[in-house]
Image (tube, rainbow, N blue to C red; front, side):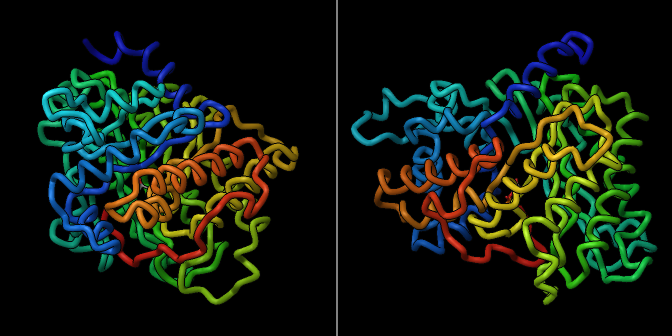
Length: 377
Ligand code: 13P
């Protein structure tokens, strides 16, 4: 089986993932990152506790109304669910619970960030490339067999300041674009829809304008590399940050939903090919409420006809922190019911935001800032 055999299936999966009113739950934190999250609610980082937490997420009743797919870490894809009252012998896989709700299982396939400076001396300090190409086809085939239907690869690009030369180095842009394109093509050969994630980090104090310019530059390079590698764009999704000023910027006027939405849509309009399967946003450390408000505003701008060149892709969410933060706190290793209620509240809010129907604060949410500089997934 190759990309040619999977073409129709890839396009169908991509469009299901971004169907109106639904988005993706990113629950693919690596074990060390999951451990840091669990520690915030006093839960030890054991395989059993990760399984209990991810089971809580996967079994929230009605989650499938708002969530189309869930990105998982490899451990979770093969893990049995731990449901209260179910004997070990009768346990089903966590992905069976997701599929019961029509939620498509996905898998993080990159093997993490590596400092770019080690291999390319002319890169800027603090830049990375993303590893995981070795043996990727075989792993992707195994994941497909297990039930995964899409994949994620997260590359990060850093803005170093506000000048014209302060964007990610040319080498970092090229290296990450090539890695993303090769990954995308390889997993398509195994039937997985690639989520292509060149995350332009919020780290720093740059302006909104700088974020927009650098995002456009990065996405253009990524799609050039995708064309060069023959990636089937109808069967692929872009996952990106919204265009916001740097997390340390004090220019609050640039953080209004209107300004962020306008810059975000403009950057995408200028760089994303029409035939792409869809675009989903990461939350990147935005507070839960703001992530929903911005998404709602983006849909509003997008519908207003301000932009002459109409897109053909749907815009949705693929949030990690902005979907899980309150749910994790409410669960705290004890209350599945409270965890479910908090997760469903944010899932419903973001679902409404994809339809431009979210009324700010109509669902419980947190305003905690979730940004961490140099965030590793
Ligand atoms: P956040 O929404 O927490 O940024 O995570 C999304 C994600 O999957 C990053 O790769």
